[in-house]
Length: 495
Image (cartoon, rainbow, N blue to C red; front, top):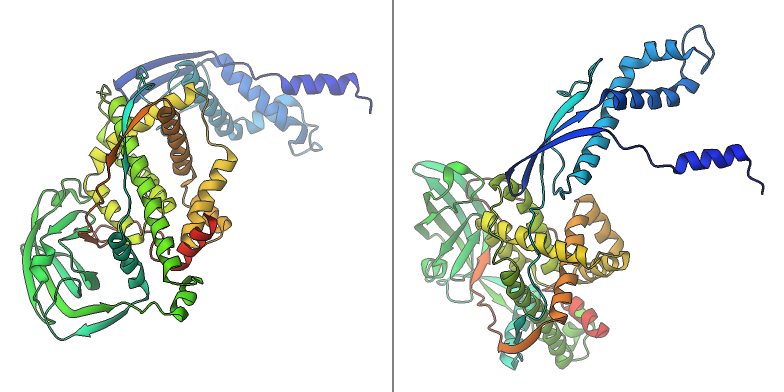
């Protein structure tokens, strides 16, 4: 096919880069992670953008008395200039913010904060506007090669496998109501009332929980829960006090002591199912008890791998952040806290932890939101810089693998998991997780290791997704893994 000179010229014109704006930019640094930017756009650039807008409009403009696209240029500009002003202003703002960010060499971590309606596009002279933006702080990348690290190792005993198997089997157990007193290992159904003086703050009704030393809520822990309810019968009421977290969403309740009333409405016992051939086949097609126990062992080893990687990461980031003395604004931490929660939950999901474990972790993060988010952000900034310097990025197949893992744990299709992540805006959190893991792998490849015994965490907390002040908490995404023998069977088949 022959291409005309006119077509070639048009293609060359299209491929040419848009001329840079002649900007005057002033940047103030209120803190390590904040920039206040003042931008002045020249009159020549404003007129150039108007010209480009009218070049596009003129061939299709409809003016009374003229055929479409045939009206004189000056008439079109006069008639439509006011209508084109918002379009030109929007294009100028977008292009000038992008150029200013690139020219000033800062990495934005949030959208620029400015009021579009409050910015005026003048009829004469330059346009000046200001915006605030949160940025990654400037720092020297710490030395990360040749670190000496410890790796936690553990061989699971038969007793530990039995304990984890019993936890799994509670999903299929039969709950019966007891007339006798609550004993260790029992469950209690509670109505819980939180009060500040005579004012009721919030209530929980009909919540059934296992008796453990700590009852966790999203902004407070009730320690000694087991001592409080052991020996109780249906109809008994217990009283105690708790102190709300200093980072509770409700500022008026932070660090405040409030009263707790627990009404025991039922005491229950969990009877685990017998491992008959019929039951083993029903829950996952297991041939015998040994095959089920092997799947449980693989589940525990998968979770051990999470703890190993988490321990290694904590050692690495402790070294990398020891000189990261820059303070992060509290407003930034509160906004980014949700992202840290998303990242943590996704990581626990892909490692096969059950909902109750994830809920405990969520409540722990909420109660220490600012500190945990500040630590996580500092780690992310440094790991991101190392990723950039080593050209590490998340590839499409990385997303596919992560989504497939989450789907397998929840017994869902990868397409459904991806759609849910995209709808919730969690793909960025997944990307950060992938990149950070790749950087940790890069650092560990250059490190030397010594083995240290792994101490399994105590199973002493039961969690309820409830905020004492009545704040609305984000619902925990549904997942079936961690208590699902069929998923364990699938995992065993893949090994």
